Image (cartoon, rainbow, N blue to C red; front, side, top):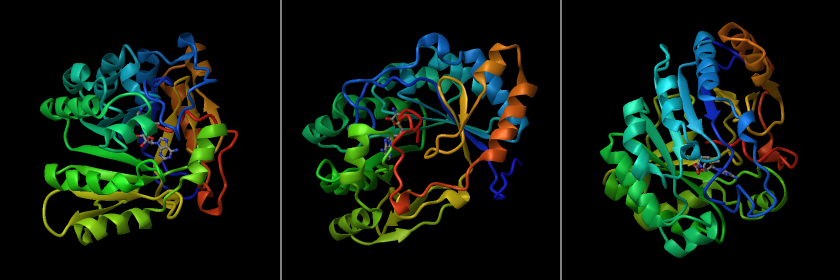
Length: 329
Ligand code: SAM
């Protein structure tokens, strides 16, 4: 197992396949002034497969496709098939806004995708428009239904709690989790990127404790359900009665860097060592200079060796100069 210099086992690779998105969530992407990575600079499906093979050679077992919005990549099914086909890949998941899943859920499942995290900040149509800007709750629900009928279970729902936008709606989402047996995770807003998105994150932050208190006041006591996975970033709870799981991901109020097991690959081929640091190691140059699995594995070993101890969001450090498109949670 690959361990970093702090003794953490690093075995989970999050692969961003594209930086475009069909939504513009207020805390993630501004409406104007964006420049995207030109297509020739994106890693190809074959290059991503080489990175996955190198990661497996280094002991990685878990992989997640993300973005931007990963379903916007025209060859997303091929990318999925290539990674799922690498011997040693035990888990392949995707984080998506689900809008394109009515068309893609089945081909993705057939290509070897196992699980999905779907991003839904609110079930309320008007507030969804204000927060996620494009897309409708009907489209997202159709995507979730398509994923469920394609067998992509369990589906986890990601909800980023943003004051004055959706903080009052967490109860409806938790209630829906109880009715449908969903696993909804409420995520604390992180100040990623710069400009208006970081400003929103800093001013509209809601601590998980407040979100949990709001849910318990409306729906009754939550009972902690410890995760079997020590690297699970969420603290999970069940309802005293009924189905469903409610999780709280608290990178600001309760950072979990000590159990971080991740490495990130950017869409243009750099290992990004920590979500909240700028450090990156280029892998595309090695791939395009004729390098294969051994060369990429050597870069990945170096990246693991240089992984920082963690971020300091709890001390109010923001990521002002970071690119905002590396998130992929
Ligand atoms: N487009 C996909 C989506 O919407 O889920 C994948 C990429 S998106 C950047 C990955 C996840 O990051 C989202 O599901 C959302 O929960 C989370 N996210 C985005 N911006 C965030 C922020 N500023 N703080 C906390 N979580 C954030």
